[in-house]
Length: 84
Image 1 (cartoon, helix red, strand yellow):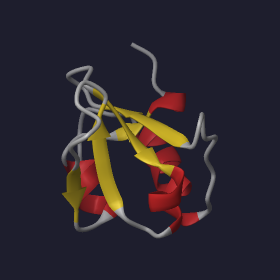
Image 2 (tube, rainbow, N blue to C red):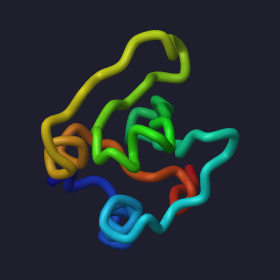
Image 3 (tube, rainbow, N blue to C red):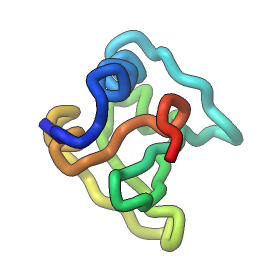
């Protein structure tokens, strides 16, 4: 698990997937990493429980994670609860 994010950010990210607890903007849910990289997942992919992260800088590519835990371990957390 990503040790750097506070527990509430990790819990909120889990709720996004487990309870559909998210707010989409233009069909996208936004995420951040500790290195300030930003990315998004399409709402349609999220509903299919696909862990495809699209980097903001190159949204035509994606990184696919096999599980929510793998995505969290990579350092991603939902952006709405994170402030730098």
